[in-house]
Image (cartoon, rainbow, N blue to C red; front, side, top):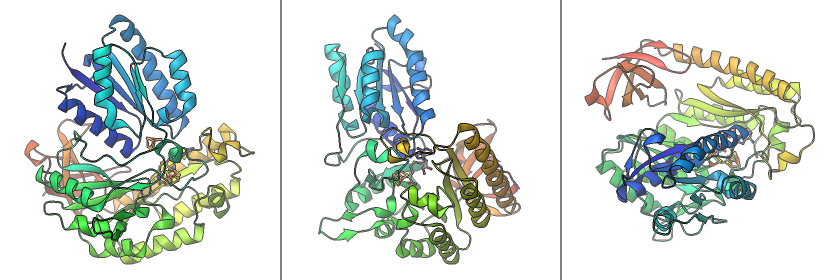
Length: 441
Ligand code: SAH
Ligand code: SF4
Ligand code: F3S
């Protein structure tokens, strides 16, 4: 039987990196990745539960696979990721989708090869969910999406329990990898041609590493350690919580030239009252002060954010405070979300949930503002020369290539295949709302 696999990923960068690890393990087992699920003998769906629409897409996708599974019993269907850490989902899978072959969670992806072998040998189903993360498993292979840039976990889980968010329940408590393990992984990536690393964690700024000598290493300390690695030119991270943005990290932004001048700083709301009810541990003023501090230290830093519209109890005035904050900060870009009820989180039980039509109406006003600011900010790039790490052919236009600037702006330009994985200087010819157009210098 030919050994091919296909992975569908629904979630965040951490979810994406889990998929890269699954792809690495399958490649080591002699499987080949295929572009379309219909050509695969093993299909994996890596799920996300952060909002309701991710749940819906998962069950939609699963529905599509049922017929094929009936026609081809040897076709193996695996489901994993954050949704599998929720008991009601597991119950639904058992009763309505008993034909799924392998179910595993976020804490035990390293067990996947064994689960797959068991299914192949015993022709039986495998379900294994761990309630919490045990010891961090090191040395897992990963099949990267890009040649020149890599995702690197530095920590797992989240302790913040924002009242709307499911992640602490699906990813468990915070656990930090050892600094040496992270450095060793990135050294190997550099040897393999990686120029840029994206350090991943739900809240990287609360990284608490301990080295072999027993010394504590915080996030800023880790950045400086990684900056010493030859071959790595750019360091980025996702995400840092505003409450934990340390002066040492701001100093690293100013002094460490490898640390990209870009920060994703989710604000969620511009209203101090809502922020309190979200359990965010900062208020409007302290957030604005932090933005000032960052811009003083690094004047051209680009800033992006996440905003939730229609959190329970959000009044029109409180929503206006969000619009007002967006206009003050002038984000380079913002991810905007309609508040989505997540069972098991405190906010799901809050009274005064906002009607859907009100949420949508506010959402549209916010998106319009966010996009007009993005367009204005990008227009300023016209005529500038930007150093771009080339990622590959642009998705929209096969003649064009694309890559990212230091500030994480997406740039499209006419290029050549041999530029992929390398840095090029691009003159920006047009700043659009979501990207920049340019030409090679
Ligand atoms: N750990 C990251 C974010 C992880 S989830 C952080 O704290 O920054 C990514 C984004 O999804 C969040 O920043 C939030 O804006 C959004 N989000 C999380 N739960 C949500 C919910 N229940 N409804 C709508 N958006 C949500
Ligand atoms: Fe969710 Fe808050 Fe943790 Fe981010 S910090 S993952 S929003 S609980
Ligand atoms: Fe989704 Fe899990 Fe990431 S819920 S956003 S895949 S941590």
